[in-house]
Image (cartoon, rainbow, N blue to C red; front, side):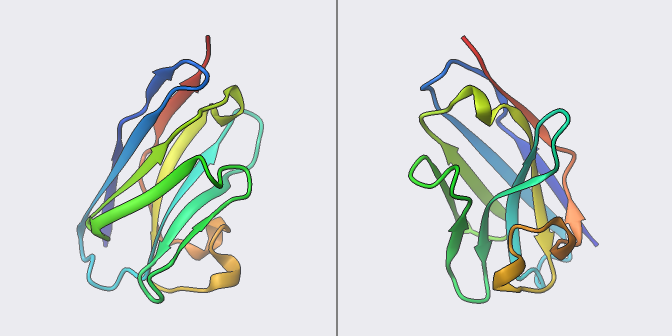
Amino acid sequence: QVQLMESGGGLVQPGGSLRLSCTASGFTRNIYTIGWFRQAPGKEREGVSCLSLADGNRYYADSVKGRFTMSGDNAPNTVYLQMNSLEPEDTAVYYCAAAWNWRKTDWSLPHLYDFWGQGTQVTVSA
């Protein structure tokens, strides 16, 4: 089992920045994919970014490219999501997720992931 815990959410004005953190514990050696998702009220859970430990690449949703950056020198144990130029449309609960496998075509789909954190609220509002 793997346990994930997110932190760093909060209220920020449009154009502002936040950095989310995800800490993994437990049996992390077999994690191949670690990702960030978000879910706004009334909407489906959306893949935001992921780090593939299989190919070393980072992947981003089109809606956040150029604004969000995923990093983690100690991945998968600790990863970050730096969010810049935040917009009201970025308001959501953000979740960290981990998978014991990797499929490039499915990185943004929740069903790929085996473990989930509890989520952290990000609110972008003036």
